[in-house]
Image 1 (tube, rainbow, N blue to C red):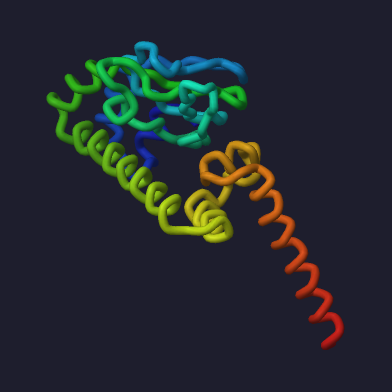
Image 2: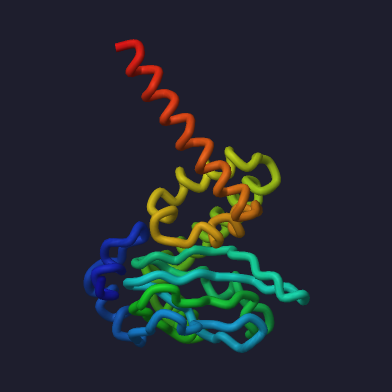
Length: 203
């Protein structure tokens, strides 16, 4: 998807004149699988939109353990810069896991555009509100739900992602082990088989 189309079709759609002017401020780049868009602990002054392809946001602790905290399947906006940086340094690493078309804009330039244009300001504030809501929702999921319920929550909120992203990433995102996720999926398959068998006997 091209940037102009995304800006005029996204949930916070802009008018065509504003979208055309806004799109012209972004730089669009093709990035191959394995490319790192941002690195945890290093400067990242940009806003990012994944127009096509897939990427993930991950955090690595001091012992080298990595946790997936975000999935990005085009077309979508990566979490706003203000929500994933501190003092200009990225709190996450953003990795391209399938060849991607990525639009980038310096966050300071976005601030200037927001001050000059009410529609762009509303667009950007809407993106930030959505990101904060997603973070709160995931925190609630991890605190309140068990493994099977977390998987059901994930499927409801991200209906395509189970096919688009590695199950080890999904397990990490849900705060469970890959083995636990595999067991949950196997139990579902077994239950489905048993149900079909019971229905067959009844008929």
